Image (cartoon, rainbow, N blue to C red; front, side, top):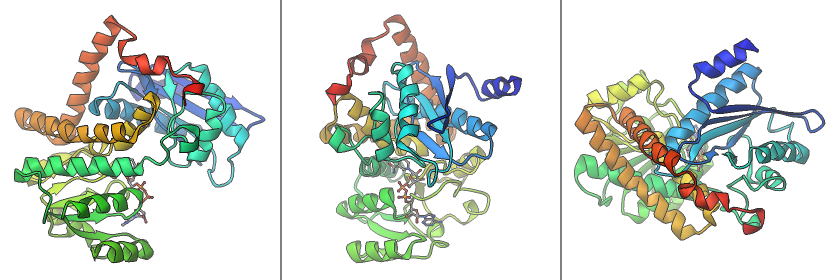
Length: 371
Ligand code: NAD
């Protein structure tokens, strides 16, 4: 037991960590609420075949803290939380498991709001919704917003525009050469948006069929997955996996700026310092890819695609604010993003302590029947 508490303390100042166990439903889960200074803690439920409980706990503590920063930097009235379910998502799922999990979420009375994540689906969240209103990213048929990827990609487009403005002094993307790594949900929607703006695309995916589709649809230049990061281009837009900015890749980069939707792009934080030294402007990943989070936030208020699109537009100003802090304080952009988030947590969090309830109006009144 002592080891568990030590781990929780080691990973920062979490407000609450809840172990969820239901034998008959086969549920073993952990919910971590990192911080609710700005609003209820929101973060998806990851289902993964963790090798140990310690591994699951480490993941949920790390991810929930990340959500606090993401929501704060996005300007949302949300805190940070996350949940993990221990199990193989391809074999161990059942309706009972997700309903039992929903009962635990419900017992937190809205302090934690869940959503889908790696290993869970909109369908799973439908089962959670049968037990609690504190779930978002549910199916449109249930009043939800469904797949967030188009909104994530829309936010990335605004983020690319802000980063291009900062580096090249223009918001016009016509003729700007963008290298897109990964043609999945985010990457392919992003290319739709970029082509509509007149950008020139070079792209890749390890899935050859996806490459063929994008080549045919947009007349995009396709290169091999080994070459994409080293293209001579204006913008590198990583939209596949994490840790692609590392000791091996950095010396070979030929892009001017990096602005893409993938999570955890920096292998280590020091690579962000190195990018600054190289004169490559890096759009911090958790800021530029916050469109999906903004989309589920709008769902909590009662979903409207127009309001969701208005929200994702704010990523433009959020990034410009970060670039301003970075220049003024002489720090790399990833640190400037943390600084912006921490300042908002302190200043707005303090205001909410004085007058609790004002900024959480929309969530406090939410009922199952409202959606
Ligand atoms: P996805 O699984 O739909 O697409 C990922 C694509 O990357 C796949 O087509 C895959 O074949 C390809 N890929 C994998 N390894 C590759 C490689 N080495 N080279 C080239 N292509 C490779 O996932 P997605 O939803 O589009 O998410 C993409 C990234 O954006 C992920 O890092 C994800 O965490 C992040 N993200 C997604 C969302 C969202 O709303 N979907 C929100 C925030 C962040």
